[in-house]
Image (cartoon, rainbow, N blue to C red; front, side, top):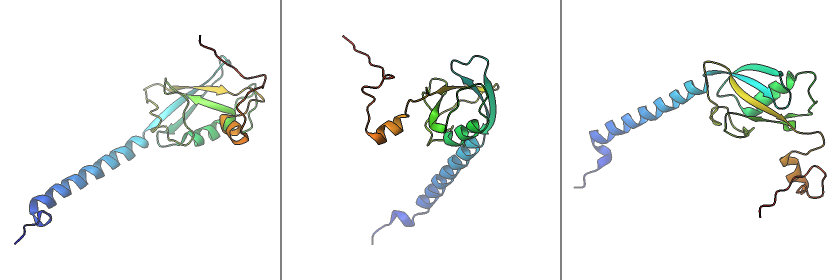
Length: 149
């Protein structure tokens, strides 16, 4: 007669505990993603231009950029779409459009979280558009190169 671990009461108790822990971590994650965060957009090379926006950590960076574009401050260079600027936050680098603020590890403070907005110069293609066209940027007047000797 073979003994089956699957039929043992201990196995089922351990499985139930593990299942509850997993459910708890998912619900904790959902609560974390619903936490409100106030973002303070600071526009590079445009002193004094500041916008604040309240959202949640579950919001995608792409949606945040679309909302920012909808309330774009007058007096700034016009941008056609969300590829015309980048969001940079707290040493986390450029925020990925395809991730949520939580996935990008945007910190939440008692005060608004600073987010730098870098506007692409007119005529400069986004990296995505350069990749699609097969251009490496060589020969363009706006290219930059470094040589380390």
